[in-house]
Image (cartoon, rainbow, N blue to C red):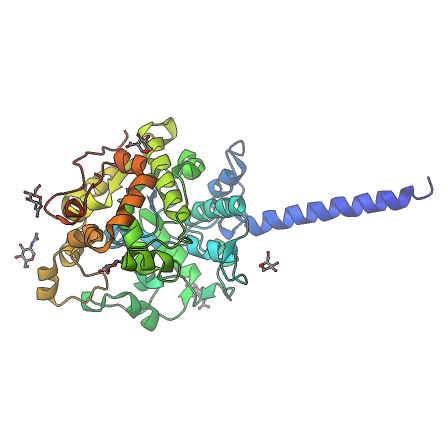
Length: 419
Ligand SMILES: *[C@@H]1O[C@H](CO)[C@@H](O)[C@H](O)[C@H]1NC(C)=O
Ligand SMILES: *[C@@H]1O[C@H](CO)[C@@H](O)[C@H](O)[C@H]1NC(C)=O
Ligand SMILES: *[C@@H]1O[C@H](CO)[C@@H](O)[C@H](O)[C@H]1NC(C)=O
Ligand SMILES: *[C@@H]1O[C@H](CO)[C@@H](O)[C@H](O)[C@H]1NC(C)=O
Ligand SMILES: *[C@@H]1O[C@H](CO)[C@@H](O)[C@H](O)[C@H]1NC(C)=O
Ligand SMILES: *[C@@H]1O[C@H](CO)[C@@H](O)[C@H](O)[C@H]1NC(C)=O
């Protein structure tokens, strides 16, 4: 057994290597709020949960993850989530984040391929969840693992859509303060310059509510671990929209990706290479998530509200009140003012407001009916018929029916919170 010492050495090295990697990744994933903490209770909970539970290390403000309330606006791209997110963003007691998961997706995307690809979906979902957990804990340092270029001294100039997060654009995070007349998204990136993540953490801890909008998590089941964390007390606002409207909106917003659809829409002839998979996937995710909600699993009890964008657009103030009732907070006058100026074109013009989202929300939610070729509508209806009927969207059988706007395609439905 001449070579045995070598073998042993090799094994020891390998095992040290593994341990080193494990410790390193543990340390990396350990974020500052937990450092030096002596009271990591509930270790028997799932591994990713206990990390956020030992949060007695970093404490700037009056709120911590136990007495703060946490909200997720769970949506899909082009389903009205920016509009709905503003209902939270405008409230002075809510710390709102507009899609922080963007940074994670970027980090997991291979941008060297022409069609940008996600390298590992399961790992990505785990990273999404870890980031949400840490952000709900007001730990902004955790984001530094993903922001490109890497922040220096906890300061970054690359925070995604900073201007859509009012707390990150107001004192003390941003020294400048603005009046309502300046409230467009670009004001912030011009005036506030770099973002100090320590200040962001502090500002987060000064508010009793935190809301995060995301369109990047496919299914509500992917939120189960967060929902089961007793100290998060998560409220899930599940925003849905008619998939025909989602598609029409994506065609406008993502021109390159939807070129074949645009050709189809313009010529009435369907290119053979048109990609039906994405909208099919969207519909599947919508109905899977809604079905999960309708089944009322115990992990969603008291935590789930389904909102149709069309209902919100038609009746924004009442629907906003329902949402606020669900999260257990009084709707602020600022939210009401924002709604009036962004859903009523004449009021907006009268006040000379410069909101970038100014539009008539009711008209916008349904405008797809005038902007999609009937052939496309029929195709989506057959790909998504279950989703449409589950969420209460009527199908049309003729162009006349499609274009006749006095005929609503949204069946009256009441979606009560699951309590
Ligand atoms: C990214 O894609 C390119 C081209 O397909 C490939 O050569 C490269 O290895 C990929 N990078 C990673 C990190 O997978
Ligand atoms: C960021 O803010 C913290 C807290 O106010 C401060 O101590 C730190 O110096 C700031 N960082 C930079 C780079 O200005
Ligand atoms: C819209 O604004 C105009 C002008 O301020 C006002 O007269 C009208 O009542 C408003 N409509 C709604 C639905 O709020
Ligand atoms: C589809 O085509 C119609 C008529 O050419 C056009 O008005 C509409 O804007 C197009 N829709 C989209 C989503 O591009
Ligand atoms: C959806 O379409 C399938 C196949 O055409 C049909 O069997 C099913 O009954 C339809 N579902 C609804 C809810 O209309
Ligand atoms: C549009 O729908 C309404 C309500 O169903 C109906 O009364 C009207 O005749 C329709 N208009 C056309 C042009 O078909």
